[in-house]
Amino acid sequence: MSIGPAGHVARSTIRPYPETARRAPRRTPARTFLHTADGVRIDAVYEPGTAGDLVFVVAHGFTGDADRPHVRRIAEAFARYGAVVTFSFRGHGASGGRSTVGDREVLDLAAAVGWARGFGHARVVTVGFSMGGSVVLRHAALYGPDGDGRTDAVVSVSSPARWYYRGTAPMRRLHWLVMRPAGRLVGRYGFRTRIHHRDWDPVPLSPVEAVARIAPTPLLVVHGDRDGYFPLDHPRMLAEAAGDHGELWLEPGMGHAEHASGEELLRRIGDWAAARAG
Image 1 (tube, rainbow, N blue to C red):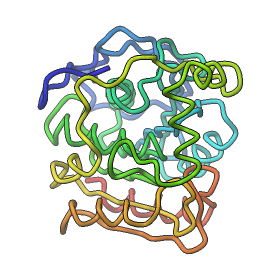
Image 2 (tube, rainbow, N blue to C red):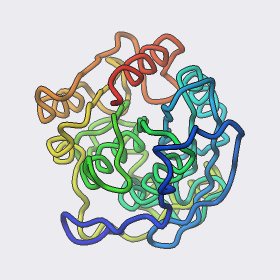
Image 3 (cartoon, rainbow, N blue to C red):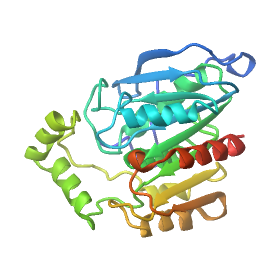
Image 4 (cartoon, rainbow, N blue to C red):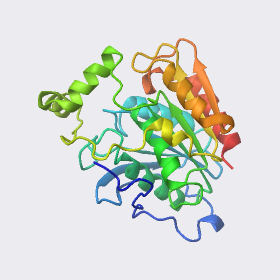
């Protein structure tokens, strides 16, 4: 389930067009299957939004997909600020492959970011929720500010800081879902999520390790003080590792990930992204 040796990422087969910086962004919707660097087909949706050269690439949480109502709601909120790309991680929805719960999903995000730039957008913001929140952090660290799959700003919502956390009941249930054959059957038929049966080998870069490598790309960490999955030591660890280039919002009364992200919070995230992304 590894993306390769430490410090190396295979590049996506999706490439920006060379004339991207000179042409106006596309103004019509699109849907297609992208092909990741390791050959997985990823279902992706492009919506042109209202105006400008900004595009949001939204990375959903575990058991989500591009067609889930909560993902569509988030896309609609960000469309007020620019174009939006949503996609289904491997093993989710109409995408191929099997979920590696945050490891090779970095390749899925890289393909989506490259596709977004190919529509003529000069500024790309990645916004991830829960598992997707950990993926946007690792993606920004591994692809760097000058890479083909680079992003111009990163927003991580409800992300874990470290792997294998089992300190809450929801996370113990999630580990059963991922690690046990019976759990993977529940994932496939109950949550429409196909989960890989192999353990990580090697263990991928953790979110807190990734955060220290993101600078100078602007970073926003968002976390609810009623998150039932990851308590507040997780966002605080991420913020401490980020140092001066990161910003932490602890949201009173907020729960976990997409379902807990209200319209007012999404508006503030949109404002932050528009101001910080280049």
